[in-house]
Length: 82
Image (cartoon, rainbow, N blue to C red; front, side, top):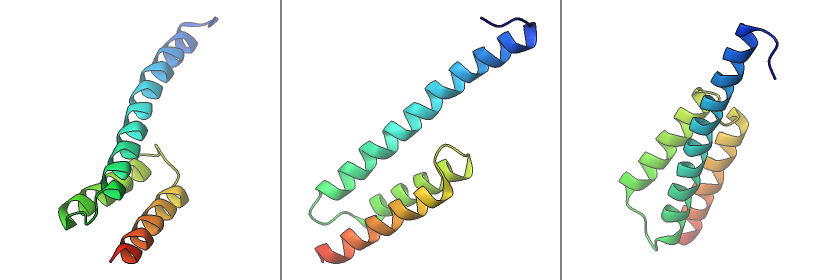
C-alpha cells in the first residue's frame, strides 16, 4: 500500500499503463500470427504490421532491438515463402 498521495497516484498510473501496454503487445502478437498464417500476405498487411511494431518500439512498449528482431524474422519468413 502506498504511503503518500504521490505514490498512490503512481500506482494507479502503473496499473492503467500496464493494461494498455499489454493490449498493444497482444494486438501485435495477433497481427503477426495473422500475417504468418496467410499463404501470401498482402503488402498492406505487412506494412501495417511493421508500422505497429515501430510504434510500439517508439513508445517503449517493446524494446527497440526486439522490434528489429521481429521485423527481421518477418521479412525472412516472407522471403522464404516466395
